[in-house]
Amino acid sequence: MSSKKNHFEIRRLESLTTEFSLLKSLSTQPLEAVSIDHRFVSFEAPNKSCAVGQLINLEGLLYFNDQKEKFTATGRISEAMELDQELTMYTIELHRYDTHLWNDFRHALDKAQQDVDRLFNSMRDSGL
Amino acid sequence: MNQLSALIVDPSASYTHNIAASLKALGWAEERIYVAKKYADAKHIIATKQPDVLITEYSIEGKQGLELVQLMNSQSAAKISVIVSHNNNGASIAEAAEELVDDYIVKPFQGSQISERLKEVIRRKANPTDYIKNIRSGKQMLIEGRMQEAEKYFQSALALEAKPTLAHYYLGYAKLLQTDYPIAVNEFKKGLNIQPLHFKCLTGNFDALFEQKAYASAYHLAPTLLNNYPIGPKRLGNLFISAVFSGHLEDVPKYHSLFLTLDDVTPELRKVFSAALLAAGRFQITRQSVEKAAECFELGIQVLGADVEYIDKSVRALLAVGGKGAQLAVKLLQRFPKGKIGEKEHSALVFLTAAKTQTRQQVIDLGRKLVINKHADAECYQTFLKLLVEDGKMTLAEDTAAKAIRDFPQLRATFNAILEKRAAS
Image (tube, rainbow over all chains, first blue to last red; front, top):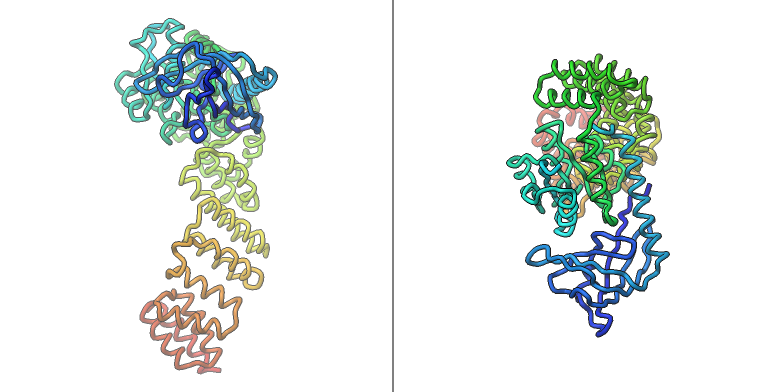
């Protein structure tokens, strides 16, 4: 069982129409995806970094199976949920992206959870 | 379900928001969901609000979420706890299972995963069988320190299940708490007769044997435990101690790779493991395996860090062998902390290694400096005096002996005896 952390690091986020970077500090402080789905990804960023409906270009690294893969996508900010005075959770609906790579990443997350469950359940008495 | 209260602990607002939204979707009232980004805030909420459910990151500000689980579980046996973390290290999962965490969810979350798992874990906990109800009631008695009543519940549970492994475990655990080790071991064995690899019975058996200092029997369980489960830091420390006291010193270095897999290494564990490696190194010296001894000492330094006392003991142990041991001692001495080079302890070791590896004149020069700088310890004085006497430098020897006696008056006879050897010869 791999003990390496599986995660998705967003390293570039820019407006698809203007090609301006929406978050300047990503090269030094990449963002980490909080939740993912078959064609959605959520992350937290400073308030007003993006606007709902905005079309974006996304570039990042997928860390899974003890390696990293470059991942690029176009998409649209589908949701923005202000968390506090500083941070908002944004959700991107992915449009064009390598679905095979994305699915491999998601399968790796599933596999990690299954491995954890197998080990955890072998040590833990259910229902207690 | 919406009568329950929950505490979510995570430094990330996104995760707390995500989990809170899942709970609300399951029908939880907003005012019954507490959120903490900081460890101290979480502790305060547990103490004052006594939430029913805890959903926490494994690591918060360098502290362990499992300590919050312990705090919750000390309030009631009916509490529910869930770890959410990127950490999927086996030893961490083992620790969570031992703390009776109810679920372990790996980040990042996928889709409605968090919601579904929370729903399932709460359903499972809310609908226990009669067997589990009895065990839970017994656990509650244990929390309240009512041992006899706890045992009655566990005894009742025995009749409610065809394979009551867990009831035997808790009967053993209750006896372990009362330091009635032989009966505890007996109950754990009964559990293992039903389920030979039952984690709790295996670890309970190990702990009971360890506590009664039956180190050989405890260590005998090590292969079964290690071949089937990851091991947490506390039990690993006890395993090192069992290995040393049961005479399995040659096994100790093998555990270094296990040690490296741990995420959370306490200073106590570093001390215990490095002490075990020191003992293992000394053991190898008695078997004339000097290189293996040096490997043990080197691993000890990797575990503990460049600790002056540890390096001192290791270097002196190798020097005592001479020959190859002295060469390996020189190498080990290079691990001395940079900031302490030139200080008394370092100078003394440099002199003692030189005495085994350099020419007599070089050693005498070093010895003079050592004494002038007041860096000589008793062993250095003895070594230096012997050399001076052998070389016929009696004036310097007598002067050095006077200083040695002044610094170590209790060794006057030893120093004088070295001087008298010359007179006798």
